Length: 179
Image (cartoon, rainbow, N blue to C red; front, side):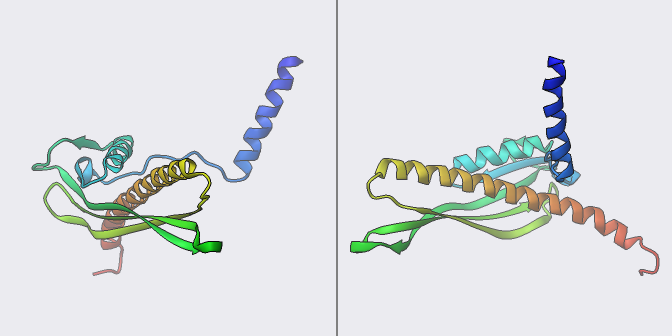
């Protein structure tokens, strides 16, 4: 009886999660033309590390050096900027925005551009407390880390879209009634 009381809540949670449409995330299916990739990120080691990990999780072999047959993902710009948004009494800044600007492009193993030069711009706003400067620095660091995670996710979505586009193009070309 005691065992049954433990199982019933777990089954109820599983049922509720399946009914609401919750599904575990899967790795992005990436095209075979970028299954081996060299990643070059200028100026942001954290983005380089997290992007490499995300690609490896998507079954991409990340190479240390570029070369023939190896796709190259270039991220020449990955910068943060902090901007004040509002001011309180006595001209004290009370809100900031942390922005991350990233530019990237991707060439496949044959040197053909498969993802033309693009920009990803993300921002997160936060309230500033002038009495807690140590906490504010920690908050900015956490926001920057979150923006890096979001940027990696945006890059992976773009790479997944390349794979979907590559699969749809042959199907559209072979459709009946199309020249």
